[in-house]
Length: 384
Image (tube, rainbow, N blue to C red; front, top):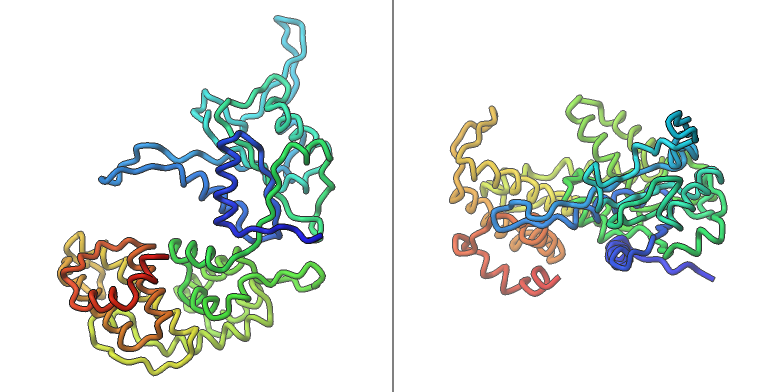
């Protein structure tokens, strides 16, 4: 019987429902699909801000305990002799949440639980089942989420004891490109990574437990690759050596395809030239490169919006005034360029990123071409 799998955004919603009911969750999934990052997102999702961007309710802290690296005493504590009472007592773990630390509403994340030795699983079992271990008690407001790889992933795993498994609500998560793309854009992942994967969505996750390949593509490894490429470009690393980094991160086969994509992307116009209206065409026909250009334009608009709000761009290469009126000229050129040059899917991606994901401070009345954009794509952009 096949597993019922869910995408990360669905997993987030269901986990929060389980938290409302105070039920522990076991999140299953292959390596590298973002189980740990999802927990950070869930913790941050509880943060509430007012119109002045002031925090009115803080995010819930996530205590990440990697059980694979622990001994039973890391959970239960260390016994010591109390001469006053002539008894053996336990010094509780400093990692566990307490009200004294202000962690009474924390999320306790027990990662790699089924990779931990049985003795550590047994200690976790007591904590999950009874919400206590030894003399320690979990604060009432703490929720428990555990995570681990599936046995079919051929990682280091131990079969979970049935009494422990029965305590959990089990969710099986899979990689999903749309969820990852939204996250990647919001976190500034390298535009070439997003551009390539927007065209080749099936390349996001290529893990095969039967393969002997050392490197393979996962959402995590693509993010790592973006960081490596940024640092390699700053360091002036040669293109051939950058390709070696690609192969060592996502695999040899993908390195060839991704390198070809980057060759096309290197021929794209400078985003600032597009925003200033100096470029009004696009000679590169490769679709994946178009995705890279759109993301680059959105990244630059976001960066320039912060500068415009300060009133001046003091970077050495610019040294010029930049106010919000000038910035809106950039936005208008961005919209006109998309409408005139790019395919509808690119227009939707760029508009959605600027308006919905980045929430750029756009005043529609200052834009000549916004009405055309809204008329043609408003439902597809604002209705998503």
